[in-house]
Structures are given as structure tokens and as C-alpha cells.
Length: 375
Image (cartoon, helix red, strand yellow):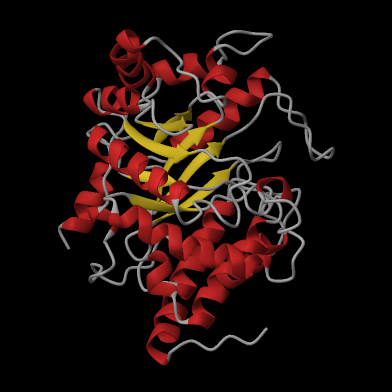
């Protein structure tokens, strides 16, 4: 596919690609873009560590216990982000409690088969706007309004099979992004499930570029992802066994487009942002991490209790700006799947990773953003 970028953008993309996503620096963002340092984050220590709410929209604890719940999440374990799954209103007090205890909530407004119409004009849009306003007033900044659109089960029947499905998704995003921003929230672009995510990301970026809508699509927004290694090492596909080409940024981009069943899919997003956006925007991984029992790739060991702890703790450690394999400033948070599978796993109870988190350094990512703000 031929791609033609304006000369200034193309030059910037080439210079940044040569340096790599973590090194790409175009100076402070200019309106309507926000600099990474200007996006909301939790108060120190912001580790970037997070966890996902229950999947049925129920509350994890009674309303009167929410402050204690978030106090323990942050003070004992170091979680500073929390994905709130809301079926409409009803989780405002959870958002307030998270904010009081220094945890940044990310709200997904759930709808079955959300793509490509949610929220529909009329009553559904009015309710959606009201819910965004309610959660903004409660203290939420970030909002998701869809889920894994690279899976047909997240679409209205037969819409996924239409030849213009991706364009329909992009039109949906342009509409919902504007709605969320009008009601005071920060829209989070639809998170994809690993595997086909790379091609969908590339095609979405390319569609917005072709339409001349890059700014409309991403200025002031965040980028959703569901990053996880399945049962791969954290450096897959550049690990010794897989050893895909990765000596240059372009080689890494092409390798990750071929195989993004890995946590380094976050690097792929950064490389695509370097190519298509004038400035990076935050990446929020609102599900993911390593799952107990995963054996998707038979050439690697399954994820048992020990490997679950090692992989997830390895992911979290690389959120530290001082780590030699730091993921990068743009990757704001990993909200791993899900609270019950870590704290109340049905065969084990509390997972071993939690003991490691209790003992781990609770670093603050704020130092990276202070450096950006001081430029």
C-alpha cells in the first residue's frame, strides 16, 4: 500500500524512527495536542501498575469499604491505576474513593456489541453523555466506549463481515471521541486483542491519515491496548529462540506487525505513533498481563504460578524510568486482568505475584514527566 505523508511529517517520522520510539523527542506538544507531561496521572508514587475491575460490573467491596480497598491496593501493593467497568451509572463512589486514595480510575462504559454504533444518536447518546458527565464529576478523566473491535463478537451481527467494517469503526471513533471530550473526559482509543491487533492498528492509522483526520482522531486522546505476553518471554519476538529481525526500528516494526502476541506490542504502538502522529499520546493497557494457565504457544512453557509471578513482575519493573529496559514514557499503565484472578484465584486464592509486589520498590514515574515538563 502506498503511503504519502506531508514532507515535514515524513522527515520527523524518519528522524524519530532512526532513534527509536523511546528516544523520539519532538519538543513540547502544541495545541490541540497535549504533551505526555500534561495528561492526568495519579499522585506519587505513580508506578504505572494497575488492575482490572470485576467483569460483571458488580462492586468488589461494599461502598463503605471502598476507601480501605484502594488504600490497600496502593499502600500495600503499589497499584496506582484501576480499570472501572461500569454498566451505566452506579460506580461513581468507586471512582471517588479511588481518587481519594491516590489511584487513577479509567472508566469503561460497557455496552454489548458496541461496534460500530455505540452510542446510537438519540436516547442512547443522551444516556452516554450523562454517564460521562457523572463520572467526570466523580473524578474520572479517562473513558473507554468499546472493546476489542478486532473480534467479531464485539460487533452488531453481520456488521463485522462488511467490507467497510474498519472504516465504520474509524467513523464511530471520530464521533465518540468528540462526545467524550465535549462532556469533559479524555477518550481512550479502542483496545485490540493481541494477534491481529498490529494490522488493525496500522489500518486505522492509515485510514485516518488518508481522510486527513489524524488530529481529529488522536489530539487530546489516549490509546487503549490489551498488552500481554501470552506464554512468551517479555522480549519476544526478539528473544534468542524466536530471533526475528530487530536491529533497526524499521525491522522491529515489521517484525511486530507480523507477530504481536507479546508484551512488546506496546513498542509497536509507539513506532506507529512515531510514524503517524506529530506527538505521542499515552498508551493505557486496560486489560492483559500474563494469565495463569496460558499455553497458546506450545514451544514455550505454560504460565504456572511461578511464571505468572515472574512475567507480571517483570512487566511492572520495566515501568520504572530508571530500569535499563524501560518500556518508555508513552506507556502510562498496565491494568492487568483481573482483580479476582489475582486476589481470589479459584484454585489458589492470592497469587504469588502479590507477595513480590509487597516487597518491591514503589518507584514514581513522575520523574520522567517532570523532565518532559522542564524542557
